[in-house]
Amino acid sequence: MKRKGVLFVLSSPSGAGKSTMARKLLAAEANMGLSVSATTRPPRAGEVDGSDYYFKTDAQFAAMIEADEFIEHAQVFDHRYGTPQAPVEEALAAGRDMLFDVDWQGTRALKGKLQNDVVSIFLLPPSLEELERRLRGRGTDSEEVIERRMARATNEISHYDSYDYVFVNDDLDGCFQNVRKVVEAERLRASRRGPWLEEFVRTMERQDD
Image 1: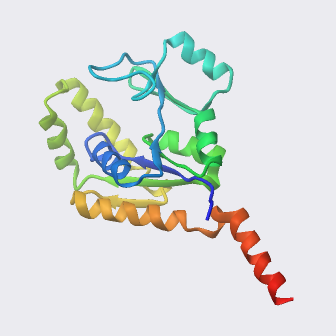
Image 2: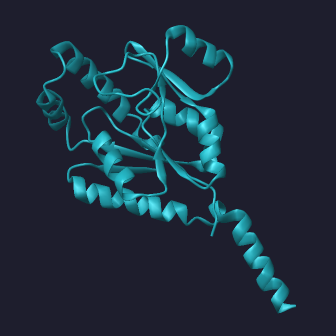
């Protein structure tokens, strides 16, 4: 049953478990790949160009915008991020699903261009207090960065109602099972199995004649 690929968007405030959820989902779903974004921020230790991100200079990123090579792009803190369009279109046509790690602005842009192919999921933290505790527990951010992330989190959470599905990530395994149910159900939509399903029904109709 060949079908068109689905673009699954996973969003949450920093510290709400989005990266962990994405890793679990990619490990469990063989026909799902992670959409690789382009960014102007420098690589962190261990990151690989073309695998973690496409690392670009400001000039290169601007040229990609000028050439209309992005589905969406945005400024996040001090750097720019964008989703290259060509790999996404290739995956959709081949029936492969793509997982996107973008914020609400990126999600809105994706839906604006590929509305029928996008399924959006938002993860809420159990509380803002728990979110701050998780951020501090990382031990990687300065006080200033933590304050900026908390301020941004409040803004991101306010856009929860623009998503198709919203889950409170207070239990990782339980939340993961809910996300997988969404993936399974959305793959089975009749609209995603268009050509194969249409031909199957026509065959049945011809047999009835």
